[in-house]
Amino acid sequence: MAGRNHLYIPGPTNSPHEVLSAMHLPMEDHRAPTFPLLLKPILEDLKKVFRTETGQAFVFPATGTAGWEIALTNTLSPGDKVLIYRFGQFSHLWMNMAQRLGLDVEMHEVQWGKGIPLDDMEARLKEDTAHEIKAVLATHNETATGVTSDISGVRKAMDAAKHPALLFVDGVSSIASLDYRMDEWGIDASISGSQKGFMLPAGLAILAFSQKALACLDSAKFPRCFLDLKDQMNSNKDGYTPYTPSTPMLHGLRASLDILLEEGMENVYARHHRLAEGTRRAVTAWGLKLCAQPGFESDTVSAIVVPEDKDARDVIAKAFNKYDISLGGGLSEVMGKVFRIGHIGDMNDVSMLGAIAGVEMALLDCGIDIVPGSGVAAAIEYYRATVTA
Ligand SMILES: *Cc1c(COP(=O)(O)O)cnc(C)c1O
Image 1 (cartoon, helix red, strand yellow):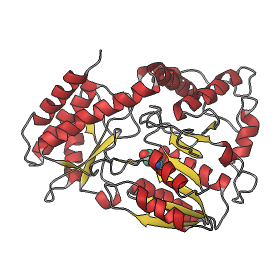
Image 2 (cartoon, rainbow, N blue to C red):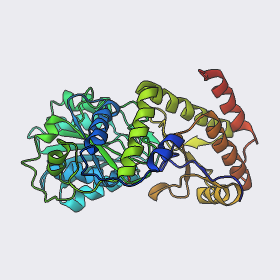
Image 3 (tube, helix red, strand yellow):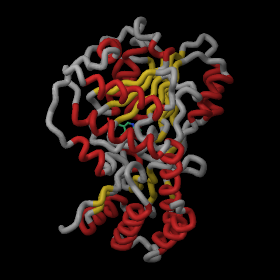
Image 4 (tube, rainbow, N blue to C red):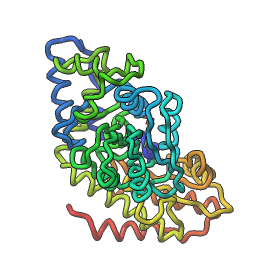
C-alpha cells in the first residue's frame, strides 16, 4: 500500500521528526565524563513536566508497567493494604499486580465509563480510622475507556478524611498531555512511560517521587533489585545509572522535553483538549456515544461505542486493512463494543481529521448508519473556529 500507516492508537503515539532524528546517532560511552551532562538536565527538566519542585524524577529502562512495580515495591511491604478503584483494563492490571505482589488489595468496582467516585472514596478513608490503608492507587487516565479521573478531587477527599496514605498516580496516558500537578495535588508517586505523551518508543518508565515516598525506601520490605530506587539514586546523584541506559532514548527524551517545554505545559494541555473536543464533536455528529460518561471524557483518548448489533473489531479491521489506519481496540470488558481514537502526542488538526475521515469510511463499510462527512464537517467547524495561529 502506498503512503504511510496512520497511527491513531493512544500509544505508542506518533513521534515528532525531531525526536526520531535525535535518536539516530552512534552508540556512546555511558561511563564517559560527559554522560552526566545528558542525564542530569533530563532529570531536572522532567520535574517541570510532572510539575514538582520538591520531588525527584527517575528514568528506568522499562515500561509503564514497571513504573507501577517501582512505586509499590520501593515504598510498601508485603501485606500492606492498598485502596484501588477499578474501572478499566489499566486499573485492573495495576490491581492485579498489587495482588500478585502480595499486597492486601481493597478493590472497589466502578462502572466502566466512570472514574474514581470521590464521595465514596472520602467515606471509605474516613472509616479507616486506624489508617490501615497505606496507599491509594489512582489511575488518572483510564486509557481503555477514555476516562479521566479528578486527581485534585482525590487529594481533597484524602485531606477531608485526614488520611495519611500515600497517593500513587498512574499517569501513563496523562502526564505530558493532561493537566497534571504533582506538588499541588500532593502526589507521592507519579508513573509514566515513554510511548504516550512523551512521544518516544516504548522502553522507558518515567517517574517522580515525593520526599514523603522517598522516606519509605528504608522501611519498605519488598525484595527489589533491578527496580531498586536507592541504587538508581546512588548513581543518579553523580549523573550516572546503575546499569546500561538506552542512550538513544535518552537523546530522544531530551528532544521531547525541549519540544514540550518550549510549547509550555499549559499549551500542551490546551492542544490535547482541542484535538479531543473536535473528535467528540465528530462522534456526536455520527450519532454515536463515548464510553466515558459526561464529566469523565478524556482529552488523550476517545473510546467510541458502536451500535449493539455491531462489532467494533470489524471497524478496526476495516480501517486497518482497507485504509491503513490503526485504531485502538476495546480491551477486556469492552472488547468488540468500543474502538478508540488517540489524540495524544504529536498530532494536529489535519492528522485528527485524517482519523475522523478514516473512521467514517470504516463505519460506513461496516453498515453503521452515519451521514458521510458529518463527523469531518463537525470537526472542521470546531477546529476552524478555535485555531489560534
Ligand atoms: C499504556 C498504559 C500502561 C501500561 O504501560 P506499558 O508501557 O505498556 O507497560 C499503564 N497505564 C496506563 C493508563 C496506560 O495507558
